[in-house]
Image 1: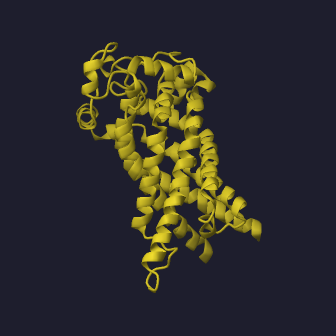
Image 2: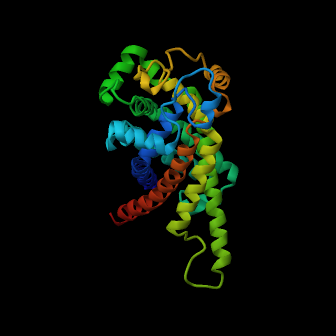
Image 3: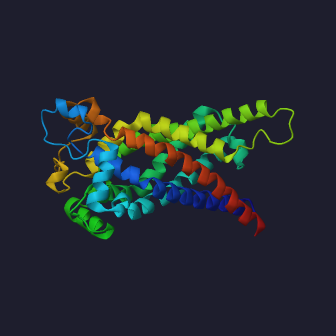
Length: 332
């Protein structure tokens, strides 16, 4: 009976994680496409930085609004959802694995499978559980992430018309190992990113519960453990923003590895040639030498603008999906 209960809990966690991930990814896809275009552009991405260029030519994208207008004019509205299918195929197993591993680890550490007991774990354990969950989810879904980046960054004319041709083309040119290009910086990034995201989310939830307890002490209307959807949204927003701001440079390095050898149209600027970077440290040095510190923070504005609502939508959707699925399972 206990094993059946654990199986149901794992099913709820994985299903709620997949639902929340799919909703979040679809809603924020336009910002993600703009962010990727900035990250893979070797030329400066801000107007003021153009004054200091000494290596590359004219920049294709120099600001969020300008990039959005260009993508809309050249690729139409579907351009903002370029690569969304592999993104969903990536994010659904990713969030499914992430939340399942997260709940399993928290259950093991707290000795209870109840979510309300997990909130009392120390912040350090929350960070560690988030990091472990993030690593497991990354390894399980990485090829879809790579194909998503390729399709979102290629522009027009398309190098690969669809996800299948991208997988076949990448496998032919890079081999199986090529489908995991950039995995090292991704894992280095995901440990602090997932740790910060889940750790700060739990911290903000604890603060909100404490604030509710003080605010509603003596009142019968609201329980101190009952956070409103708006409070969950704010907690998720703050968690996503904090995590993305700290880990963005590693995301830039990952994207450069992912698009190595992609023969984009020359109007999108200089290409990242195959084998341009020997390893993660070499990529860091080369980006610093050629593009300065600003190069490591290309796309930071759309990244944070995207990360905040993405984190908020993911956590709120997960909380509500989990409750909804739990009510269905309990009735059956």
